Length: 188
Image 1 (cartoon, rainbow, N blue to C red):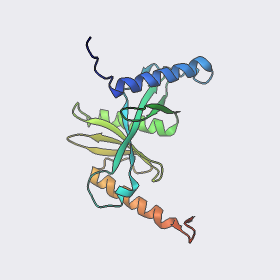
Image 2: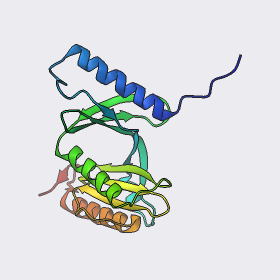
Image 3: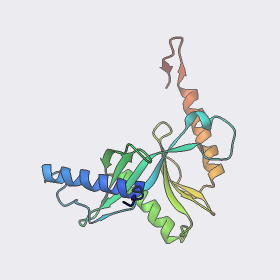
Image 4: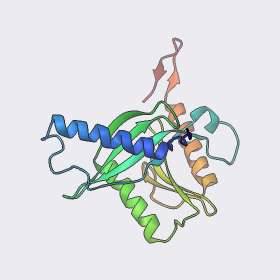
């Protein structure tokens, strides 16, 4: 008997998103009325910023992959994002989101494509940091760049410049919220 190769995370992520969205639609037709996806994008790696590593010197972005995001494009217009926690194993559905942040992410991706900034050898990734209030499209490859879509000027940053901007923002936030004698944050 032949052994089957393991299912790639991409296929497992897509199957989980399709199953979850399908279950929600079956249980509550009004929740997703007119918004059932006509197209589901390939999963995009979703990274979080390691704040402790950001404090250290270095050129590389201090990020780690925490999951995947797929875009659900509806026939009536608009997009939603489905986030899945986990990288290779133990995948779980995290959330379904829509709104200005998702629209800004989609616009940044379309802008990068239109500018021919993304070729077949580059990979689109996403970087988010709730603590720093930043989200960005990370085009990783031979000609890497980061294009923020929330929290920073929407410009093309080198990885080093983006890291420096994040490190400076972290310093500003920490300066505002110094702990008191009990370890509780005191700030503006």
